[in-house]
Length: 446
Image (cartoon, rainbow, N blue to C red; front, side, top):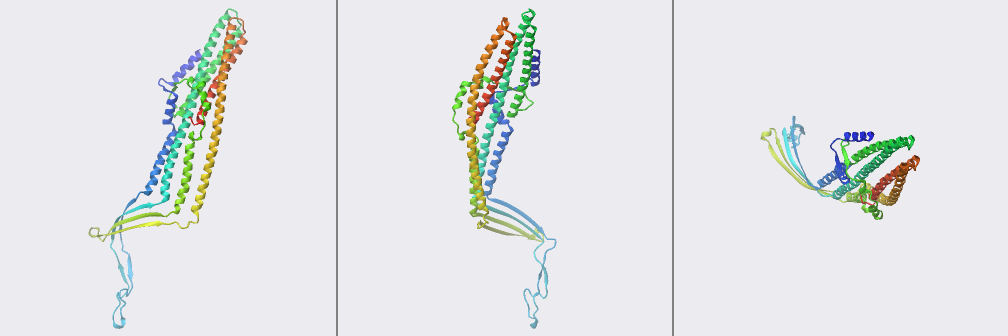
């Protein structure tokens, strides 16, 4: 008993005085708000929203401004050839104009220009398809969130129930230790009175020592199970945590029987939505490529003011403006786009085959999960009946031993069978709640 007291004291000391208590639903809610995987999928949705705005911006008119200043340190020189303006008539004494090659400089030293340019996309089919595709990308990201939430809930539930199983196992071990300690005390008194041999006392002491070691191992299991639960919840590993619910709330076999008859539907699985949206995206890829054959229409307008002067203070501004439009007409691209369309159609067909393969795999998963659930359901009921029988045998053997009509060997064997039946029952309970969770996931109820 000193050993058990020491373990309990250390557990209390290490866990600290302030602890956070969670029910299963609270643990799931905490995980949905703190799990890193979910935070990443939320960022994917935010990224998809900005992607939509990015593509929408291509259809919004663009306005740009520009300012340019130039100063000629040396004005460029050009040559006016002899007679450029008037060849003259040497016979009549009329000289050419100019009479010889003339070096001239045009312009002024300073030039300052400022302008605005406006452009607008009137029609581009691929842009409008891209907007639709980006919205589907956001829908895909949202469906991935639902899928991640399901996985988080599944992992938290299994981890939480593993802690409850370990705690139930501890309760059983504590009860066994208490009963065995009483039997050991009674047997020790009987030994002092000469009714039993010392071997009987030693055999009980050996069994008690094994139970205490098993208790210690179980404490380590609870500690490890809680750490797994913290990890699945996104809970700080250094903080303490208490599970508030009882295993009985999740091992009611009778209320779970109806689950085995639940119908399976692929559309109820959260995996279905991402697959359906991805198929639409594949179709959008083809549509966007085909729109590349349609002409693109855009408009533009420019307005500029230019200052020319040798001195900026006495120059003069000269305006200029222009409006126009462009039509880009694809004529022949060497069948580049046609090949891209063919490849996009192949990717769509591949995805459709993936969907069919996933559909069949999930149907198989549901059938296997249903079979495992029924098997574990029967195993729990059988192990519970065996445990009751083993306990009756153990109780009878204890009574016979205390009354002196039974042997310690008989009691030891019944004790061993009783502990084994307890272990089988605990394992059956664990397999049952895991199989139940797997079936709920497989039929889309989780």
